[in-house]
Amino acid sequence: MKKQDSNISKHNSIQIKNKKASFEYFYVDTFCAGIVLTGTEIKSIRAGKASLVDTYCYIIDGEIWIKGMYVAPYFYGSFSNVNSRRDRKLLLTKKEIRKLQEATKDVGFTIVPTLLFIDEHGRAKVNIALAKGKKEYDKRQTLREKQDRRDMDRAVKHF
Image (cartoon, rainbow, N blue to C red; front, side, top):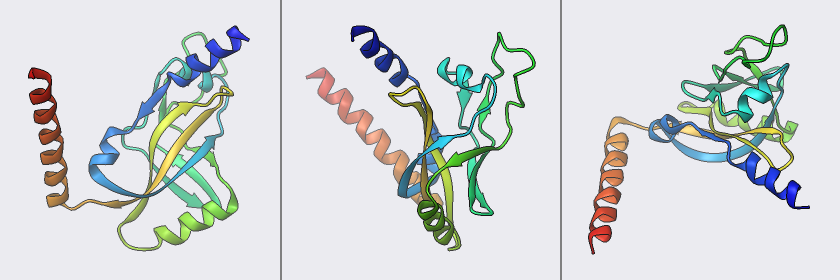
């Protein structure tokens, strides 16, 4: 029993965030999706060798895909290594995909991945968000709030 508990905590330590997305977009709704991986990609993700920088999702023929996600080739892999920036299919229900498809028809809405993680069963999952782009003044406001939080934390730390 102890060994299984240690595996769960080990898997939950892998969390790859898309920090730029929260700066660029307001999140309207979030979903958790599985990822279709091939070869040794899961081993690279478990090693933390992945990135969500400049990624987005799109829907084609009732299927949702993630574009631009980087998964480093596994060091010990050989012929089973695949293209590190290939498009990967996401696993969502048809109802969720239809909801996202209808929402993205409106101007200014897009689907962005926010977090890549390993669940308690050892499977790779990605949190995606239906997002609306921020205007320049919204971004400045976000930076101000971030700086204010830092200043408050520093003030509390000194007392």
